Length: 196
Image (cartoon, rainbow, N blue to C red; front, side, top):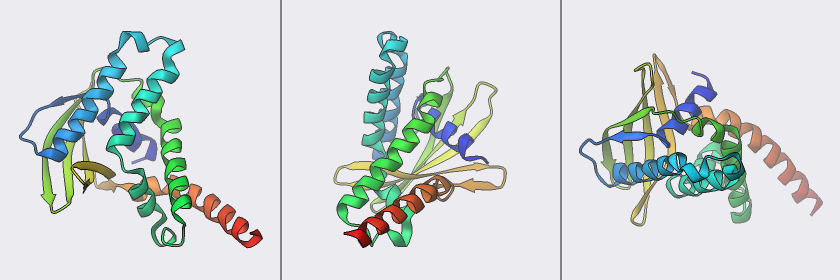
């Protein structure tokens, strides 16, 4: 599966109608975010080209609530995360989220009635997996699992896994993009540190 297909699926998962299945708090919170994105996409006042930036800001704000960019960044940087200062970690997480937004927001805006079915969830302590299926217009089902963790009373996604044929893709695939950022970021950071 190509990264673009994965993120396309992610984008529509965050922006489509849902079907109710017995759900717990993680599913309810993911569904709530999905419903809010859908309202933004369907808002006639935000469909005008002049409202593009306002529409995108609202979608990003919702994504920032449900996705834990710092945890995603931590997992993408792996062993390099520990050597980063808190400000460097925050900067990397913000850059990573900005890249995802710039790369894929237009796919979210192409929403045209695809559906998401919430197929269940598994909770183990403060970790959860919410299983969904993206149903395309041609009735193709794309399973997408959101891995989430609890932060206080909120559940936030840090990874997604999609299965197409025998291929499973999670943040390690997104890590291709993250690795490019990380290499540039770590190299620039190391150069700045050695000059400081």
